[in-house]
Length: 253
Image (cartoon, rainbow, N blue to C red; front, side):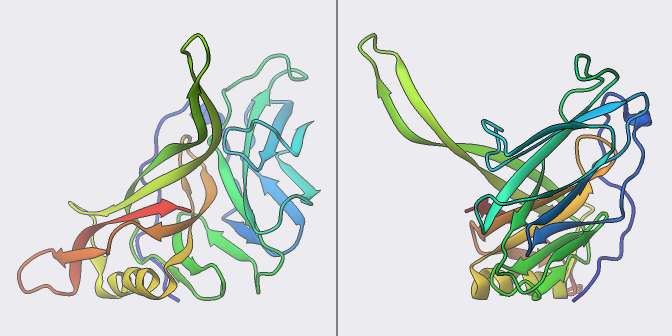
């Protein structure tokens, strides 16, 4: 197990009410091996209620938790499908839910697998790879990437009705992730070896983080992924085979 050396916040973007949010815990679970779940988020200045939704679907078409509460932490029992990803979001209100101070938060996620050997907790600001079957085989990135996450819609059916209107039934969203270690970013040899080990021997594995997204507080996320291509890295400068650059492309499965 290895820990990254560069601390602090990166890729932070402005958001309505940025200055009104307070920091939350310095670590969050991204994989639970039992059904007792605790979700928490930053307190928003002026909010007296928060709406929380948790769903098995990334578009929140149906929710198994949809509740309004006065605290920024919610504990509940998750009795939904085992060994699957959940999505969650929240928004603050200055009333009993008739006036919302902000849009919905960035969507967070966690995975529930009651057969997992252990739970996985992410420190604030970290990224990690870990084995989907042996979750104790985990690698925390030495250096954080510049990243993009692109959702791709997958459709179960496409056709036209009698009026020749195209009809599509939405099935799900799978993310395509790009982790870029180029420009000012780089990897050390150990990190390159871990990317290749997970790609070659694990094939399908988890990528998780607890980092800063739409607003200036960390959001936990997890993806079950496969490498789209073989991870390829090149030396950052002649004579420095220990410092490399490259891009890792991953596809959610």
